[in-house]
Length: 210
Length: 217
Image (cartoon, rainbow over all chains, first blue to last red; front, side, top):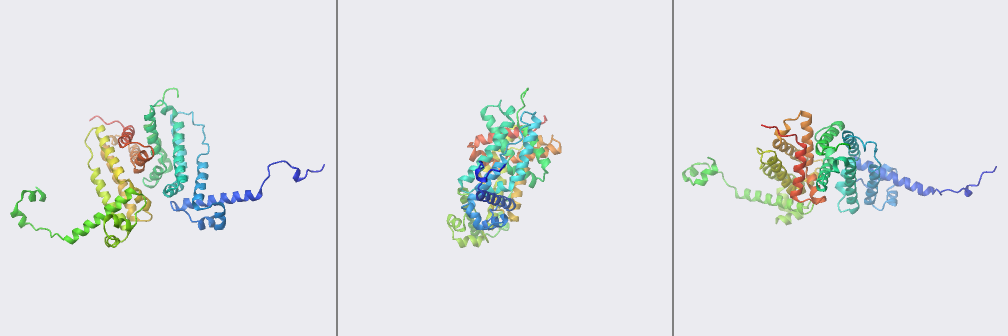
């Protein structure tokens, strides 16, 4: 039996050129993220990014009109990874397990993204796009805590709940993590233990049956 | 009795006999000019987080750019001098706490003092962090500020912290230090729109929860 001709096959058309372009874009973003991490909070130059990605400076500017657009795209890339669904197997667990799970997840995120976060905060300047992303990142952290500590937070009056979330957010800030390691010299485990202890003291008692 | 008290009594014989330090008018004027330049730098930072240029500082201070650089080798030296000035002022402000009061009074005194310092010195703190780069002088001052904040916490809540074993003591100290950080204050004020009093209440409530019970004496 004769095989059907390629043209006769029905399926999504794969545009090789477009795929290659996307791949290049991705490599440029990854080069930017690597350099931003290494040199934080300095923004890498187009020449450095091009060299690291293995392309010409022209290639960089063919995909991104300026460094600011590249910054925004890189932050979105990082945001997508940070916001990737976290394991929710601990959502219904007991208080101790939930605190430990949230703290360790947050600790790992801080550990990984601290240089980029610093670069983002220092270089956001007047950029509405970058500022929005800083706000969005903060909101996600708060939403996550609101969800994981719902049993303890939901019985609180609205103002008290809001204030406690502000405190929890400040406590688990990226710079707070950095200070525990850089200023106080704590290991990952010690820093997690400090956060666990503080969150446990800050949260109201868990209602029975939760 | 102090030297200041002697002068106030108008005891002329004592005044004549004591060696009077020679007042160098030129030196005094130069110190005053320096002070005005530092204050101009700080005022500009409060208005705009971007590091002001020498021309803007000179204009605000009412001197020439040359005058600025006659007193400070470069803008970095001015930054260091402004930081030292702020540190001295901040230390004086922090010292005014109710160290011996009951738990509630100490919480209130500590938080309100710390909040006042954050409110006043946040722009300089941000500039200091943003411009520290590889400057050992600025880094050492950042360290000094952090150490002073920690010492103040230990002083204010020594009674409660002393009841904890070492590890827990350190953890709670770190948590309180994090909580009363400049950026934590800024976040409440700039992003969450809390008033001074509301933001103080948030800190007081949180520190109260973090601290162990006050031992009965």
